Figure 1 (cartoon, rainbow, N blue to C red):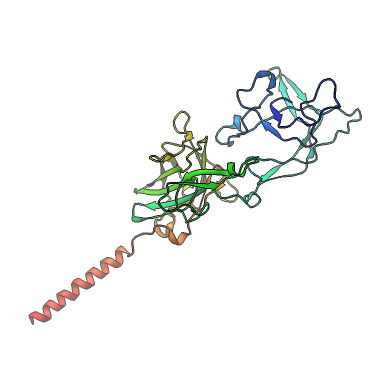
Figure 2 (cartoon, rainbow, N blue to C red):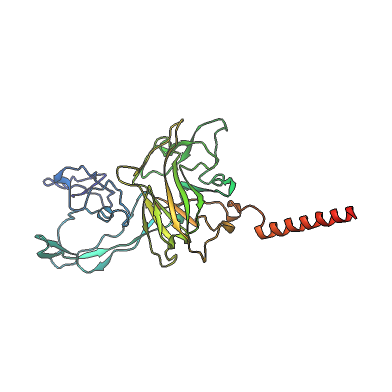
Length: 357
């Protein structure tokens, strides 16, 4: 095997020479680190099990490895793998059976020659948060310039706080790929009412004539974990207009279901691609201002329109408060206030006249 490794060799006692890499019927295969030695590498391998989003870095959005299994059948009746389970990083992926596909063709000699493999099978793996059934890892809080109140993350968004109110450090359950000790499934986070390792805060900052500005902040409540090459996916109808992020990279993600409402944000290389862990005195965070052009026919600050519909951190759906708790505009309509003022003024004028008479 090149470009990856099996976690167990298994019983290879039947082989006296050329001992196989693994003799397990269902081996667990892990990706190699980027610094793997040349003799263990293969083309497109060694991502440390981390794949970038296609919009962020297409060259790192795939990984491959090579494996030799037994010998080929002279009649061409090789059988595809029976099952595949993708553990990346939890049990939420379900993979289809391997199906015959057109043989893969690759280019060699600087693209001057095409080489075709013998056979190709393909399996598609889809993710479901319901199958994963893991504790949420992020939540969303909201605020706006026109309202002094802040809508916090809902209580117990990612589990309920078990420590006392005076405690600063709490523990929470966290999924691990493989572990024999349940104690290693506990992570240390800053105590909060929401108990989420990550909080995303959306603040409506300014309202201009033709634009409006939002401050987007991602905070890491973990005491012992950094998030490298993080990303944030936000759904909001305002993204259908021209948008500029000042301290994050940004890409529009056209969607059949949501149109142009989806925007992907990620860090800038050598600046903020690392969402660092928190300490008792400092919170790890990354932040940016986002300037959005107004669609004057649809833009409004009423009824929570300026807040996102959904937010995802590293692909995980973040828990949001209910819309009726969003920061609302101050009560009262300017036209109604003016009418009331004129009514009161006329009342006092009439009263003054009556008193004088």
